[in-house]
Image (tube, rainbow, N blue to C red):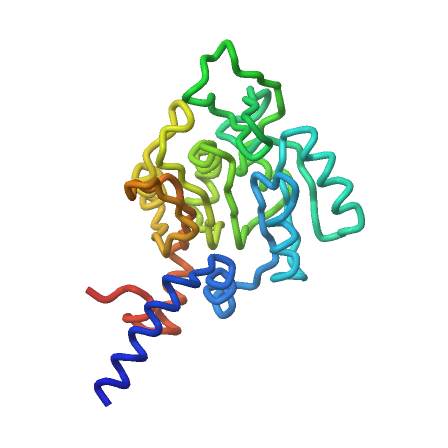
Length: 248
């Protein structure tokens, strides 16, 4: 019996480590804790994640944000017949109005932050419209965001700063975001500073995904999920202390 339990435990650990999937975990976490009606895809680029969320949550309204004109034009064509997708050409940030948007080596690396390894005189930039999530939601009467996905190349912290009111009222159930550890952009905060900021509002780290490392084992970047206090309490009520991560 002991060996059987040990094998089962080892299998579970290997399965989680080898096939850890952020989207499967989002579905599992929210299945019994929230009705997924509203999803924000911030940094939609060409819409791969928007498309993924459409397949996972076909009844949800997805607000996709992409400030780079070429990518936004592609999104408009790709989702022209998708009534559940609302496209926005805003750069989500900590302020409204004009924002300088720096162009990286590809459309995946554009950012509101300068590239760290290029002199400012060699960096191309454009001016785009910025928006705070607090004001965007207030203007549209959105009271709850079930999933907030952030992948904006170093601008994630600024986006969260512009969502203080939403965070303070637990109006965001789940945050799925990218962290860059390598010094790719100027003025990029340490990931633990972002985690501490979310912790001020009771948001708890759930797990990390899709990390990349250097040849010597230095982690370069990873994705992470944070859960609101309300969702964590619901998980605790459903699954108990051990599986909900509350045990000492």
